[in-house]
Image 1 (cartoon, rainbow, N blue to C red):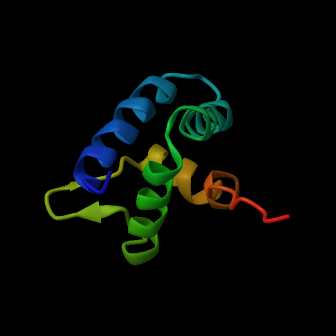
Image 2: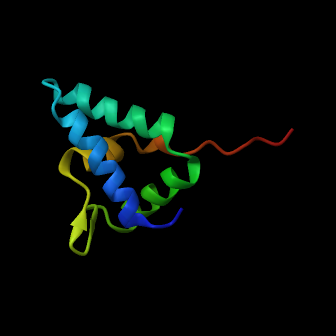
Image 3: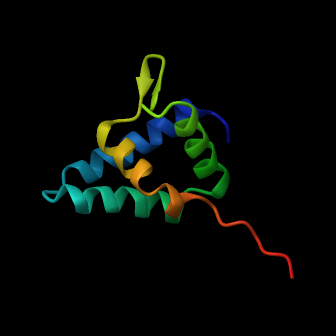
Length: 87
């Protein structure tokens, strides 16, 4: 999946839900946890590559919400898919 605008939209919808949490740290953790559990590795890789190229999370008229950007940026290592090890 390479449609970054769609991934931005998905991340922002997740962020909208967790932004309502009274504890912002808990919301940020919830976003990262959701993305880690439910996004396939290609989706996470595409988002992380996008943020490497566009650290502000903006893509033309659209962009990541502040909380989604913060959650993904702060949890980059955790969200990076693990490479299979060869035996």
